Length: 309
Image (cartoon, rainbow, N blue to C red; front, side):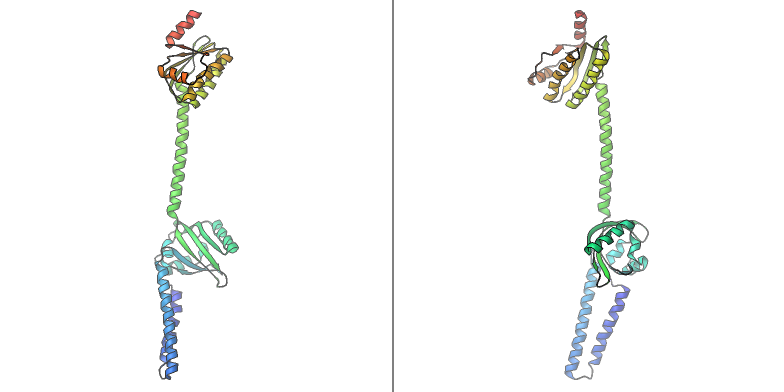
């Protein structure tokens, strides 16, 4: 779409071509031919300019030109006007007056100016602008300075979908972080509840171990249990394994490590409720099992302790 200022500039071209053709009348053939040829060239240039403007108006990106002197908008194609909420280029030029008023964040406008001055152009500069109804729209600019001509030309495209996707990803990321934190808290609570340190008798502690015994969980249990041994001056620690599930050979080896650590504190470990798969996992670690005592059930272990006095 051609703006009002450009239509005014087109009218002299049409009038000049008409005058050239009119003045050819009554001239000798050579002069008349030159005048008609000049008129034809002028009309051809005008037609080519019209085709170019039509192409610009059909472009899928906004195209604009602004004055370097005062920021006044000199040209806007249809897409540029639509991006800013206007019905036509004329409306956008009249409604906005200057390009400076369109920016939501003045500091971003100043940054774009700085880059233009330093480099003479900017590419894919992202910012936010005000639309006709004061809605905020995220856009991406590319522009080039033409100081010798006194204007800036550039393109503008809608960046709202990308910004919306990024915000959604940020929201999902934050939600995921919150869920992970909540899950860790739940896992910690489960770990505490599923392996409580119970004082069965004087100097005798029992730990019912339930669920998957991952290396991380076993390390936390070891720290908790060793602290309880010191606090209670325990001489025996019974690990009740009926509901336990080993996770990998590393966990099996940690039973031996725990037994050695408790022995250094003057206590010993008794494994109660040993199941075949647990026994096989311990044997497959190739660790020295001499520090481990076993019994069929927790009741058997307590009975053995009482008999031992």
